[in-house]
Length: 321
Image (cartoon, rainbow, N blue to C red; front, side, top):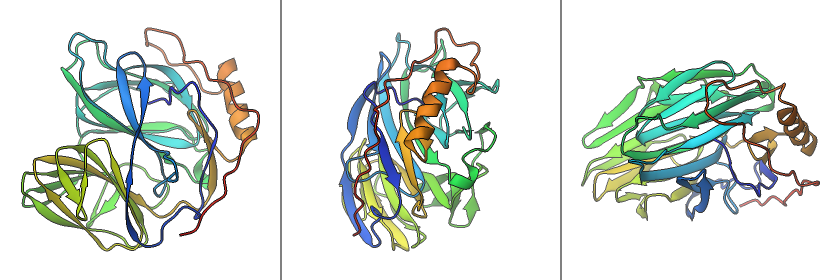
């Protein structure tokens, strides 16, 4: 999915200055952003004061939207570099096309994982004949410097491992959790899991104390470590935890995101992650001339133009807590 914000700003993310080394309960409020004509997303990362969680650098939650009789998601061809995109649905379908020639329909609780590496372009759209509701999350994972120029590739996994307990199911999206491992390719120590709880269920999820974590609420009413987390909000949990108490008052859906703190500083702008203003400026120029990012064939419409790039990257001061 693209960042369609026409006022995209340069952000310096990563490094340990913003990492909280102990357990906390920091509730993040989303920013509402239009995604095309018919979809509005709630942007949780990057957030004021909280840029990343492990290597997770971008989190949008959207829906559930009633798109009966509507075009639904329509995201024209656009570029990515230096990151992985993770498409995750609870309702609906998304048709993925990319400049490698991939053409896949992603359905609920299937993993669509695109590694941009040095350069890729793709489009995303609701199929012409689609379900009534569209509900999901789009996430980006920053690639470490040693792997940010890998050859681009796309993976679609329809079967993913699960961890279960009474009234609780965790579907592993990326990384490892409680002894099971996702088939998705990763480049940093990371975890992403979809958590489903039935009404009245309680669970204690084992965690790695070296990871920092956050939980995104997708639906229902649930408490995370005693904190009510409403749909479309995210609770940052810091590091140092060995388990996470969960409780549901209704059937509820959550997403667990975590990983080792990302030590490298990155520069993120629009749909690019680089290491300098020059990296970003070159990527924007390359998208304009059309060579580096390839072509997406089959989408009914033109490419997405890049917004204007600010002339100077401002580097915020880090903070240690």
